[in-house]
Image (cartoon, rainbow over all chains, first blue to last red; front, side, top):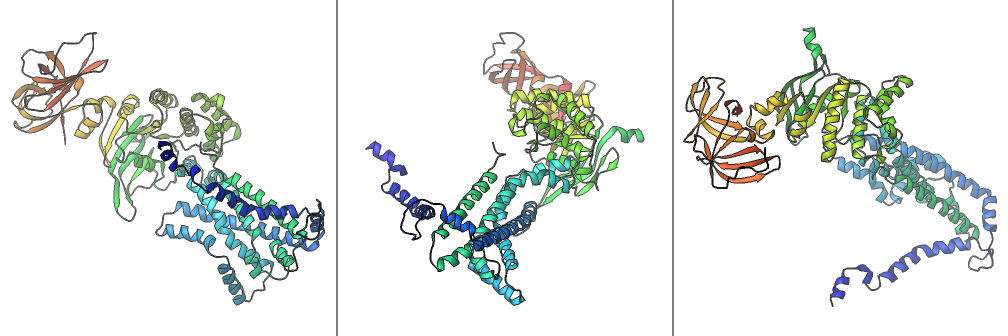
Length: 268
Length: 365
């Protein structure tokens, strides 16, 4: 009796929880695992396994369209994440030293784009460019990517700033560092893990983006997700599996890098 | 005149600081004036919120005074930002740069001043020696103990050889034994370097042991400035008397003034005298302060001054006796335990006591 009571509060003894957890992992990861497995399938028919091969990877790397799309993706992600990170860093540093009325609202506004359905800013930006008569292409995609990358870059930097002792900057100015020197000698080095983490996060978000790119892209701005989508329309081939697997690998590596950089080393 | 400004390191003139966060103004410093001499170990002592840290931050330049001015060796600091003031700070939490080694932390100020590399290296070595941290020069800040961080913070602030060193409760995070060691260490460093130290603390013992002079602060005011002995022996305010050391605060009535001093009445009881500073009208109500260790206990003989023993507390080096006086006021007396067995007085005994006239202070309120 007493044993039973003791265990009521322990989730380990609740019926069905284990099953639900196993189901959760299977539900999320099984399709991905199958996709990766099939990318090594020799058979052209996606659903029939014959034997192991790297053929589809070889084919993907020989496909000029894929190479171009990958090049576009990397170019857009690099430019967008770096630009967004610079803007986000400056904004975060400024927001951290200021105490003005409505600061909470502005802090919320910075993060808001993350929660807004992506289609909304995508359509809005499309209308904006259309009304200005700007031709859609790589340029418009990059501009739009910078916009949605900023909040993702901003948040880790802001978190890092919040954990930083404001006395450190005071100590630097006390030791004859001008505000500019104090920023480059103390604030920036301490912020660097947050900045890099934010940049990597922004890079992944840009790399994986479909909706914004689809709306604002034009001739010559096809990215990998757009290209994969166009392939799927004509029928899923193991080649699509191969490219998807590669993108997954890249994303996982970058997310791990971002988490690694963002971890707080200064806390004991 | 020139001589005069030379010997004064920091001159605080009618400085007020008002913080206004929009919802209401808070007066942190109210028209404070103060002169701190060169090579002085000067302590700002007071409870939290008394304005001592604000005054320090004004001298460092992290805050600007709302009114008044601060002079450093005769030069008005008003227009100088913190990075142009020849003043360095040891912060309460040390504020060491976590991304640098110990040596890099100490070198920081000199590098910002653009000193040649050779001079920086030799000064860093000298500072590491001074705080006995030479073997740890290349360690990271996160790899050393609190006491060691404290030493690095001191070395970092002393390395540029500032005219004034500001210390903001630097010992408060250390444990008791380390704190005592550091008190001696700080005093040694101040004597060796000859730099003016302005030390902020709420710990009266720290203030008494290290300072050349102490300013006792409360509610944005400086109540009393003087050497430790002066502050302890001649407190002028009730607050100062109570804040520093233990003290008996008694209500008395003034009697006649005669050559030996001013007669005092404690209720119906007479026999207590104080050194008369000026003529006091007989019958005036006075607030007295007497240190417990200045109460001389005579024993159970019936003399003029007496009290009923309430409680005896043995402290090892001394014993504390609690009395109730005939008029109901309470009195504490400390008696050195000069031999192994003390007097055999029990609660309820009537014990007579006395105090020398110069041990009895009259307080301004």
